[in-house]
Amino acid sequence: MSDKSIAAAAEEELRQLAQDWTEPRQGECVLCFVARMLDAWGCDETLRFAERYRVRRAPRASALLRRFEDVGGFCDCEIFLNGYVVVDPFGVGLPACLGVSRGSTQPCGSWTRRVRGR
Ligand SMILES: [Zn+2]
Ligand SMILES: [Zn+2]
View 1: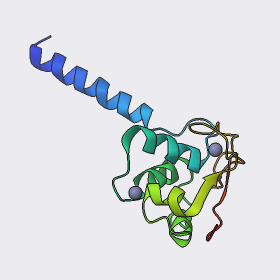
View 2: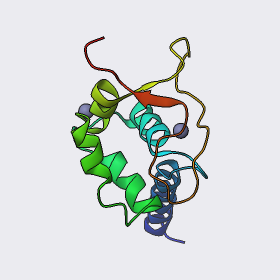
View 3: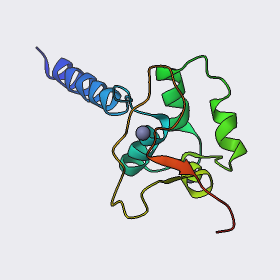
């Protein structure tokens, strides 16, 4: 194996790792996934993780991003700034995902709609 192919193999492995790392977990809901990704990667001012979830888990849910925009989430972090909060106000860190069924784009029971003006 030449040095070049070793480097290529290492790069491929890294790519694979990043791929797994940004994969929604089994039964994980969209909000827990996006929150987990934001925690690790931050927001790039797009709905990239919401879109990634949609593509990976619910490719036919074309209205998903619009649903977030409707609650003021025009990028991944705004979903949480404007749209949804953790149900448990005393929880520390990210909530444990309570799980959703396959293909569902609903948030799990750890999240609730943020009430404006409170
Ligand atoms: Zn953002
Ligand atoms: Zn969840």
